[in-house]
Image (cartoon, rainbow, N blue to C red):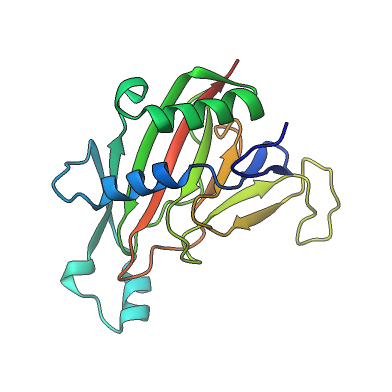
Length: 208
């Protein structure tokens, strides 16, 4: 089955690339939503900045860069308030990822300068995630552990003792799908650059 909005490509075990996740209409809506500074985030995840990193790059450690944060916005009532987005995501999950379209959680993230999301496992069993990028700065992608690759000591795939981190560079409206992220290491390789805000859509879904 061919997706009208883009191809679905397997990159590695449990890792899938999705091109052009949203229509132009939905993409415009999502960016306009995040542009609305009057909206209050559902959650704020504050974090101290890396003092050594900031000092090295900026030449000093300005007080305004001492802390950073991620703002989380939840798109509630997708069925009624965001029907187009619901339809597009449901179609993708049901027809191309063997997912349950009745279980969808869609959140928008705004990551501020010097925010870092270190390598981690997710904590929810039986759930999968799609990260859709709304910005394309080269530092704002995601790295994941690819078990199918050899390692730096010359190991060859497939071998559970070997693997390599692979970096997925961001492209606007492209998605990185990680199945069972509680079992696959992933996270940001770099930091959000000063003067930039990393915008992503996080879609949580379950298999049928």
